[in-house]
Amino acid sequence: MTTPVLTRPPETTVPNPPKHHAPARPPRLRAQRALLTITIALIVIVQVYPLLWLFLTSFRTAADFTSGSPFALPSDYTLDNYSRAFATGNLWLNILNSFIVTAGASLLIVVAGMMAAYALQVLGFRFSGAVRSLFLLGIVVPVQIALVPLFIDYSQIGLLDTHLSMIIPLAAFSLPMAVYLFSSFYEYIPRELYEAASLDGAGPYRIFAQITFPLSTNTIITVVLVNSIFIWNDFIFANTFVLSDGLKTIPLGLQNYIGAMGNTDWTATFAAVCVTVTPLLLVFLVLNKAMIQGLESGATKG
Amino acid sequence: MAELAQTGLGAGRVGQRRRRSPAPSMLPRRSGLSVAIFLVPPLLLYGVAVLLPIVQSLFLSLFSWDGITDMTFVGLDNYAKMFARDDVFWTAFGNALGYLAICLVLQLGGALAVAALLTALPRARELVKTLYLLPAIISTVAIAFLFQRIYSLDPVGPLNQLLAWVGLDGAQTAWLSNVDTVLAAVSVPEGWRFTGLYMLIVYAALIAVPRELEEAARLDGASWWQTFWRIRFPYIRPVWITTTVMATTFALRGFDIPYLLTNGGPGQSSELLTTYMYKTAFVHTDYGYASAISVFIVVECLVAVGLIYLLLRRRDDS
Image (cartoon, rainbow over all chains, first blue to last red):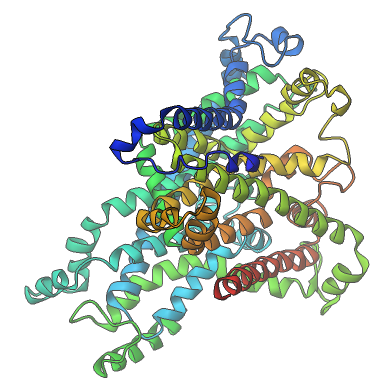
């Protein structure tokens, strides 16, 4: 997609060229900089345009949507789509369900992840290497393997069609990465801290509650942020295990907008999409530094 | 599982006394019981929802079962059917590889190119990173809606409109119902969605390359291109391997977008192994055969990871 551009900026890679060099070759350098900036701007526009289009379309009138050029700005801005979106579906209920599932799974991931990492990294035991690789396996295993068995198990114990039926597999499949992140952080907690606490008579439980857990705040934020994106947007588990309307999360709720009456009310659907994207988008824009850092560290360490 | 943890603990204490424990404790004093208390609950959660289903799938794949009547043991017949008698399986496998290829080009190629450009951008890097990552937070259902409209021919959607503007009217098509374009059309949204994530990771790695290395190479007369491929890229190889593993396994388990956009159609032209397995299980309720396919998907992922390490490591040695 963008590979040809790679060859363009031959010398601009030095972001801080020595100060005295700057006036020596301004025209060429400036041209290269401009070219680079334009290239990146174009790439970003292509990347973000679909979302912008989605947003603009949610304010279009239906007539404008079917007849107008897709690239033109809306001729008329309307909020009608939003009132129709709320009238057609159970948007608030869907958002509430997504909140319950995301909060429940995040809590489970954080608690279980910290406990496992504490056992593996801080307490240590003979077969910790084997247990660690057992967890690492989960990063590679695709979720599809769990669908049929869990569906059968759930239907036998009556867990089908509950919030828990989504929370359990979502938490379990995110657990390996959380265990990994927590243990690589616990590696850096200085041993002296634990030794001092031990001298004061603290056992493993008090040390966990008073030292390890309070120090984990940043990693907790990272784990929650990164996993929330995937859990909030989960489609496959919800689609497989949930049937009743009252439990539907956002991705399932959105599906109700398609073909409800033969043909789809696209502008209302896009308005519904915009509403459901908003909570995560706001969190993302407010916390994007922490989130970006989390995603970067999650992978560069993993 | 508790049993496993228990035996591990007893042995761990002995190991510590000998001071040759493979994972020494960071605490001077801790009991075996405390390890169990911390380890068993997470292992239970993981075991119930990840490990047990793997075993169950292996077991179910040896049976023929529709969920209602009695299970019949069929041995390896499900696998025999899969490899020898089922054309749809092979079509789906081929499509999955095509899907993988398109995702990898967009995600890894795109990520590397944009990350490399971004390291040279004098300002607004944070803004570019944020905007570039935006698609990753949108749900797949929303993305499927969006691309259904983008690919639309009647009314003319953005893609076909763009083609008309640049004079390629002939290339206009209903991307999702054309047998020749549908696989690419369902792969591109998946590639687009996560390219920002991989770009961030590669960018973070490129930024960490020591500047002295590059400057030394530049002083020796290396071009930007040479510096990139000889100095910076080899330096980020470990991260590149991780990124490749992530992108590959994510693409091999890709399901949502093809399922929502085309449900594998028209015909089987965008059927992936994952969508085929899903339909076998939950439309045809053939749990045995579906389990065999899902076992294959896991094996496929493990083989892919093995191959990536083998290929990228080997080149490292030479």
